[in-house]
Amino acid sequence: MTFTGWRYSHQRYATLSEAFSSPGSDDDLQDSDNKKATLQITASQSLPYDITLYLSLDQDSYWSGGASQRTANMGISSQVHGIAWSLSYSDSRSSHGDEEDDEPHSDKVVTLSLSVPLSHLLPGSYAGYTLTSSRHSVGSQMVSLNGTLLDNHALSYAVSQTRDRQNGSSGSLTAGYSSGRGDLNLGYSHDSQAARLNYGASGGILIHRHWVVFTPEMNGAVVLIDAGGAGGVTLANQKTIATNGDGYAVLPFATAYHRNDVSLDSHSLPENVDLANSTVTLVPTKDAVVLARFHTHVGYKALFTLQSRGQPLPFGSEVRAKDTNSIVASEGQVYLAGLAPKGTLYAQWGPGPQQRCSARYDLTPTLAQTPHPLILQQTLSCPF
Image (tube, rainbow, N blue to C red):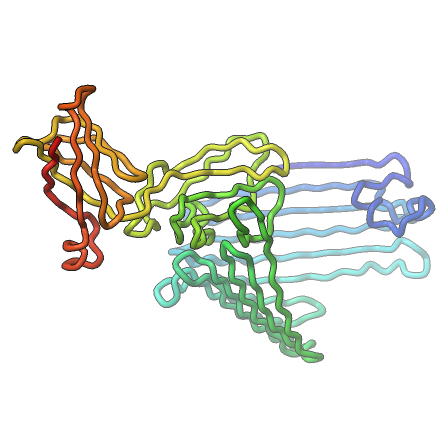
């Protein structure tokens, strides 16, 4: 339970939000509509079976001749097998405190809400129902359906229909798509008076020395991601952001003067890409654009067995090809990624001329038999 009270010593006192919302002159703050005292009480209690009870009371008094406002809320909520429900009651009363209109204004509202997951039909979707009854709106009902689609939850949607005995029926349909290139939104709504259609798009463009990157709307420090030419790679915690065809993407927000860990999702790597480092840690300054460079090998992956004079190359020998290198394991085997279809391997296991060799490889015959292999395998002779 929490109990909070304020007492304002002068009628010209106003909070920061009240001062900004006033029409603009100092005389406006002299009005007697400013608060004189505020009292807030809140309490909540958890019960078995995930049941929660809550109670709140807010009471404000004003300098204007005894004007006051009071709102009391109470309710119960729970969740059973993913189905959430709540029942609440609200009672609000206000009094102007003047002689012309000193009759209190009051309203009582009862609300019943229900939310049901529909994951067995539409993954990530929920159906909702709300029934509201008050002095001014008897039996207002709303049904809704909302959720997300696509593997990365990039597409969101919401549909609602409301029926009110006093105001008739109204409804809305909204959809939004978020990607690493920007955001799109579309909405339609109607009521007894009119129908409305709205749409919009937002995003940004980051220009760097190699070209430009289309991005979501940027705010503060941002991270330019360089995946070494690997396209279609998503971020580990931002599935809607993926590298473009040139291997670039932008994380449109980063915390200035703090460590920011930027990670790529290794499961999103194309078959012809191997990732040397999956996480880069950066500390950007305010409004800076920082570079997160990931070392990737774009090309074929192969497991070679290298032999020299009929014997496997020694364990620990260094093997390099164009733009990639590795170390020989047992039995002369070495794994290399980012290979061209044809090329030359250079091996060295000591400083002497008799401790180095080279071997040409050709992966095209294997590729002709298996167009999309995960790892190619070849045995090569490596003469001095």
